[in-house]
Image 1: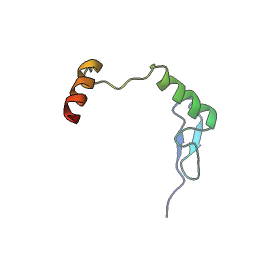
Image 2: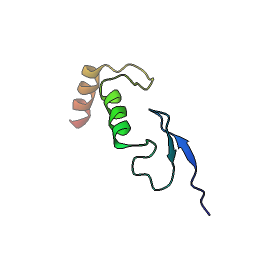
Image 3: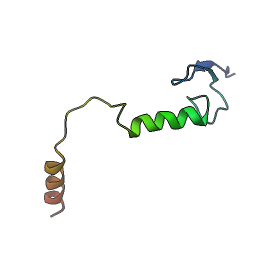
Image 4: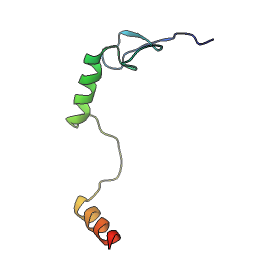
Length: 65
């Protein structure tokens, strides 16, 4: 039997039921879209090595030959 756990929305911190929530892990479409906007504006980033785009494109062209 699955328990309907309550978690907090990562954006607004309102309680959110885990089961039957189309916006999971968010509480609403608004919070989901606000979070997407933060990613799109580069406010959120995932750490990693810096990539030189030109070198990457050159390498892809060489691999296609």
